[in-house]
Image (cartoon, rainbow, N blue to C red; front, side):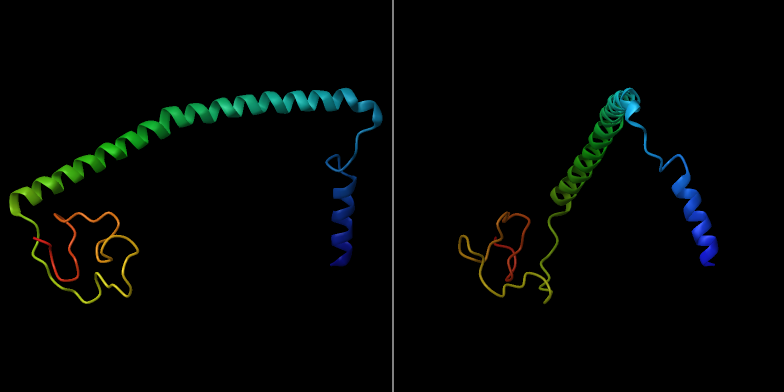
Length: 122
């Protein structure tokens, strides 16, 4: 087993992947750098196009879908009224007051839609 490992590792070390270039290969190095830069430009252009042609329309599609769903929800509430308050014990737990206002309203509290632990405000 060890002999197989040594044989395969010696082949790997002697392969061209591990050989170092000679000092004469400065022009080869410069060419490799230029090739890398051109590849970077192509890749950057590719990802910019992917972002503009796929990601932006995808985000607009999802935003439109979310807006429509919220409008449907709003129309449903207008038509049928808001649901009655049910004081579930695991919801609206206040172990200590919020550090703003009266301590009972959440930061983005909306009295039309958000209930307090006792129920709706109106």
